Image (cartoon, rainbow, N blue to C red):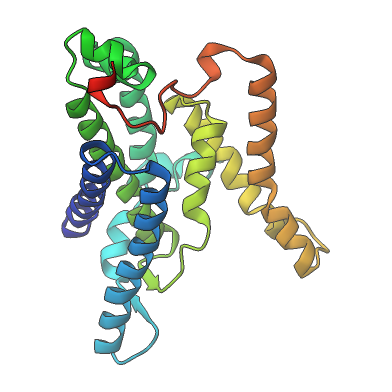
Length: 257
């Protein structure tokens, strides 16, 4: 529980800093995002390296006992022949991610607050004219999204790496989340299938025999190539429902409405 709460709180705090800089101070969102990414990597490595040094300078920290709680498969379901090992052999955070995607989809499409959020993303000036507090919705959405992203980092350390922290261990996997948003066409439920596709492509090199080291690296690029193909196809079709929010990445200046 401590690990879960810390991941949520620290990630939400990062989202709050980002919100203050981009919403209140209207700083460039791309620049702030890249800056916080670099800061986050250094922040994690600093504390990870410090704790590693206290542990004897072994270069990594392992909390396997704590990680064991995150790796427990659903009781009973994992014992089902064939289906169990394939679908129900993961820790609870895998299924929590699916539940969150479904809940977010329902919230956005079926609730008044969700429709207000869509309006803020599409045209904040019109939303503001309609009496919607644009800044409040942006703050709430960004901080909540950051907290959910923090759960992704917790999953990676606790379940994927079995509770082992090594500086720089995330590699480029965080950028897959951005590519996944594009691949999912900004629909949370599509991210479920997109995650399965990305996950399969990311480990494809392990199951393909006879690959050289260079060829393996090329195979690992395939998730990003798929994202580019999706961008090309959606741009050609030009369907409104497949496009990003109209005001994505733009600062809102109320005095200009």
